[in-house]
Image 1 (cartoon, rainbow, N blue to C red):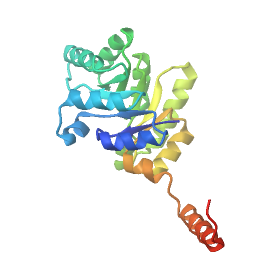
Image 2 (cartoon, rainbow, N blue to C red):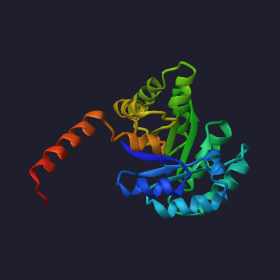
Image 3 (cartoon, one colour):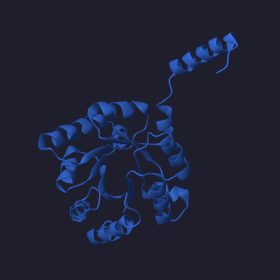
Length: 216
């Protein structure tokens, strides 16, 4: 499973990219707004940090506006992926952009039927929002499993990008369910390496090593 980081903070992206575990980045207008910086400048900077896909979202809701904004975003860098909402206008724009060779990420997916439409529209990625479903007592991971089964039934190339991930268990379960990608907040990515027994084992190893009085 590929790991994308869900942030617009360049320092976090540089740090996580430095570990060699980062495959891409997802952003949205809310994340970029928190940076207080120009949208296109932020997206361009992120695209220079990582070689992988960088999702940047349109703000328009109408078809023509989506196309106009999508083409502006696609001109920023070759690794930009245009995020579009899972609406009829978004699907129409997805079909047009995909036909023109522009990578797309259809976002705010909350049902298997929506994911089926995204695949039929030629989406590069579809983003089911796990955490937001959990918030309303619907099993977000069941949705990932359903989408995986549908896509495998018909050999759809659209990749399942598990989004709205809140904690480490979401990452594990998304991987078990067959998600192609998980987009994860920086703090959750860092926490994946943590385990109390790892810490305890290192503490013991270091103590034993120091007791030998040796150096390397």
